[in-house]
Image (cartoon, rainbow, N blue to C red; front, side):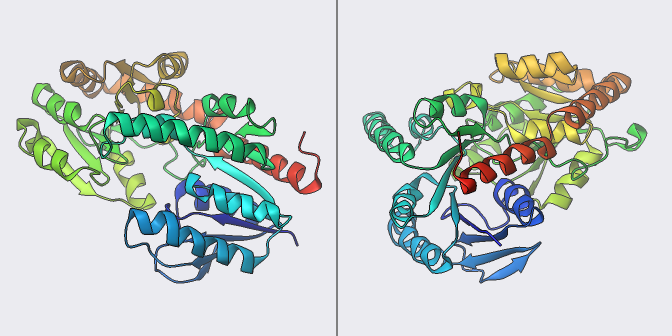
Length: 373
């Protein structure tokens, strides 16, 4: 049985993309699948995937240096046929594994150089310099790898110029995981929701401000953790916070329950480079749950939503416009239900993990057989 090992020094062990989708798909397909993580929760086997824990980092510097060494050490001990890297800081480990004659794939979840330009803890000159240096290193490293997986077509196109064996494996939802889309709308609450990481560039200020303008009486359910304590403290002083129910981090079942009770899902991210050409998983998860989407009016997102008639696009920097979209859907249940069904149908037909899984397994087959062309 061929052995596949996934490596991460950053992501949680049961990360939706890494574990729930990719690792479980590989295990089901008959590969001996393992995952190396760094969280101090111990080794465990679940759903046919063996998780190896190398210990939680004490900070960012420890993670980048000490933890990556421990991840590499464990990877060598496992002696897999193919390694799949999920963090850019593991690229040096990937090159070491290549030198040992192993197959190596890099999974680019984000356009990392662009992402670095928006790191709040770095000043602008430092951001530019680090992004430039990393971009050069990333290009040279990925040229030597067997393949590159990109989370979006936009990122794939960047890597195709570096490595011809690049393919997009989109982070679309698993059919049925977050609902069947047939909930009786009369049982839904007068609420909209946002599920995911919470931060300034993800639009939390504007979302909470929008609740001050909402006239339909709808509330907002927040599922996720704040990434910026000072922003959390700030938005809690807004008048709109009185209409917010902040639940904190949610597991997948809790996410399903929130979506099943809500009348729309918000994904009003700011217009930065990393988001404009992204395919946010939460947008497709809202669609899979059968609820309409209120999304940023980026051209790519607008095309998806308008073509499928599954939501409303708004200026993400305009709280009044966000509020108007909320009121439109809450006050017209029939229209909201139609949009929800349309979104669900689009996921069933094209925006689902089962479709992406076929592309993933074909790439693995090509790499392992040495004909990834």
